[in-house]
Length: 250
Length: 328
Ligand SMILES: Nc1ncnc2c1ncn2[C@@H]1O[C@H](COP(=O)(O)OP(=O)(O)O)[C@@H](O)[C@H]1O
Ligand SMILES: [Mg+2]
Image (tube, rainbow over all chains, first blue to last red; front, side, top):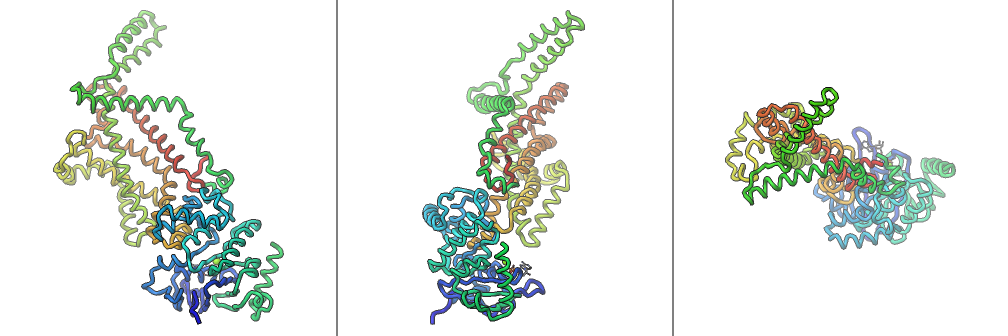
């Protein structure tokens, strides 16, 4: 048996007296696409942020490729080279062009020289279909384009794991498709992705696993067909029916 | 801030904004003439006079023609009686021009000192203000407290008092006197450097306040995204937050520059012969206070307007869609 790429065990996280994650456990193998669903405030973002240590945990274990993530001696910047993140609000560097957004990490973190970084950066922009926009500033891009640059920026670091925190929820409905399409391509290429998203389209077509998080606990975990068609927990069922109702009105 | 607008118009009006500096024709011509004169003065007095052994400060335009014309116009006015009043005024203006030609060379020398004083102080002040503002926003509790105390101490006391403390109450002047090179040739004497140090310390406090406000207005997600690609906090601040903060700070920074041009006149209180100092020295000798202070006001105005025009160009050059105040 090979070791999982990401393993999370009995993870606890509190903000003050409020326990946000109450003993979460999760494993992902190389190439897995795990979609995390759950109501707002259930701790999905917090879970992602624990994995790349934008947030420090209270107790439990997280290991990436067998390496301890949360230890005091772990170099966070080294860890973050291996774990890319895509944000809900894009958070593109506003003063840099699309290409510069993508090359900043390779140049300053990986120490690539400018020419190599640009060549690689153009490849990544091409991968998300934005080569033409290489010299545009974020403010000159549509939401969908911004998010695709955000994905290219994360890809440019050649990470082992990509985290997506609601990558399409800040987008106008007609722009969701282009981002989902890029994510689906990445999934097909075998990139390991942990995705917080309620985009059922993506979850059904690309996910290897669905995880339902509620109140800081994993309520249910399974392949998409099973979890969507035959949820075992009542809470999952309720959440899914609300989600479907919302999808139909949207 | 208009992210929405700039989304629809890429790189909004960059050309237009560069254009505005030049479309105000009379102003541009006036400023150009001013600087041609200033540079010609500096070249003749500081370089050519030394090389050819000429007298420094010889006026480019002799006063005599103005005076003879003034006399002619004056006597004509006298013969016309009450009707000649406008001519009397014209004659007065000509006499003022004659006086001005005599005083302007010395004032050009004063402008040199004022420009040096301002440029040094604003640049050194910036070098101090940047780390101060970063500490104010991102520093630990004690570092933040220290930076805040410094800023408040400086902003809460008069600049003149700060200048006097440094000049009279410390041994800074003695220390500077011992520094080789100071006061030799082009390098100004120690009082000038005391003023530079004082204005630097003062300007650093004000500039750090402007920068702090700008750094704080950069969205927090920017630093988070920087950290997420593996940049350290300091690198994230340096490569992501500060470049955006600096653009946001440009308008208030222009204000600071303009203030400093005018406040640098306080250096005259510690014997520095900058523009105001030189002018008041001449005024005390000639008693032509009104003429000289009108003249010095015009020269300060020219300096201030030049600085604003320059900063306008810097702003348009560094303008980035979606960062800072995109003027339409
Ligand atoms: N930095 C923080 N400080 C305090 N409370 C926080 C912080 N971040 C998140 N929380 C709280 O933790 C809970 C889970 O938040 P989050 O992980 O963002 O949920 P989700 O992404 O599932 O909507 C919420 O109640 C939220 O208010
Ligand atoms: Mg969230």
